[in-house]
Image (cartoon, rainbow over all chains, first blue to last red; front, side, top):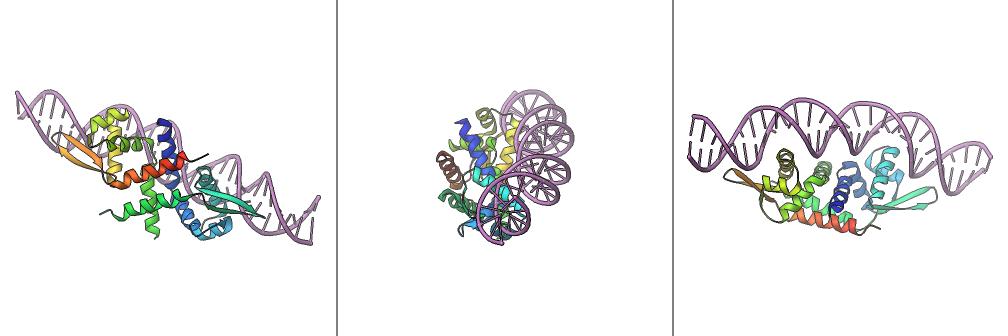
Length: 94
Length: 94
DNA sequence: TGAACATATGAACAGTTGAACATATGAGAA
DNA sequence: TTCTCATATGTTCAACTGTTCATATGTTCA
């Protein structure tokens, strides 16, 4: 059980950065390559690539290659579900 | 929208520490005072108090006084919901 | 009052993290 | 091959975070 607590903390750590959340929201719109994501979140390619790696490691996004480009998309429904409940929570605060 | 992204990141930041998650799990069992929580998570009173403050600020726990003691409990259903989905996610990873 | 208990707060220190920069890898075209 | 485009990786550094220790606040009871 203790291991799972650490894993859970690590998972939420990934959600705890606004850049990564913005990337996830961008991907809700569908599969996108790195340049498009960079442009959408207005950050340089390197920063976005680093964050995408973090997101991929924690299985929040998946990738496939398309020629020179890498196409990223949300990994599963948990991503949107977690973001949704989080949004609900902060919306209901006094 | 941008403000809400930051608020959302801040919310998940609270979930991103194993000590705080352990405290939340302890509180799933019901209302508890600080000493009992300290004992349950095996951390000193000061550390737990600091974390409880963080949890309270983000509206994840609520408090009431009972004589000398302060009784903490989960603030609402979002807490368990978020932890549950998070657990589901890490359980389904390959 | 004052002592004892329960909790909160402030400061300091070590460990962690995201962004920027430079560079490397990999794929397609010529 | 070599050039270019697209993406990934390594390093550095300032900013942030959790814990510990010491101390303060607040409550009850004698």
